[in-house]
Length: 259
Image 1 (cartoon, one colour):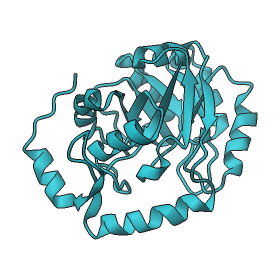
Image 2 (image 1 turned 180 degrees about the horizontal axis):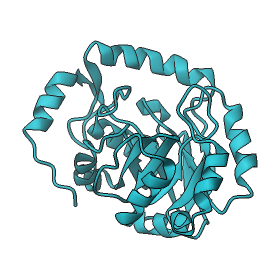
Image 3 (image 1 turned 180 degrees about the vertical axis):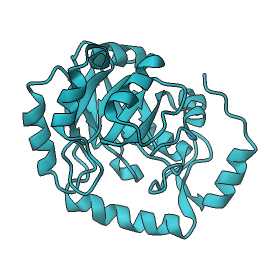
């Protein structure tokens, strides 16, 4: 069996605090995850780097993005081209379908974030072609301060033909793996098959919950504002803080090719 976390933010999100190498190092050394997705807000800028470096950390990375659709946030997975923000949920799903990807409703009903409503999810699932692509829902999100939202989603989604997924919505390293999914197999392809077959099982982590998410995130976010983020120089090196501008300059000189 394998474990996945398909909702992780890096420094390529405005509110992310960890570089791609730091995310991979933490996931490989501090969790039992096999498959990750870097799903930054409306950008795939870190995907090629993550996919190129992942084998060095004995991980597999799925290309993805968290799209800010007009109707709420959507995880768009197994795609190679960015889906623009601001489209309807239905149009977003159609564009993901054109790339052979899958969509997951991110943190529906969550407070204080741009979340999908179940009426809109049902409306989209009524379109037969869209229902082949909108195939999952985050029934557990480890990054929510108002944790009651997870219970509400779990109850509401039982009647829907969607794979139940757990994700962390990590914006700091300590959040990675606080929500995850169990699936048969170990690989990204195994996970894709499990999602399509609706056989994934959400797993609640033992890490941060509720207000602890916020109190742990704020210091890291302030450090980010001051120009310091989590960094890892190599798989056998420790995670440390590094200057964000220097990391960005180094990345601009490195041509990462998405496998």
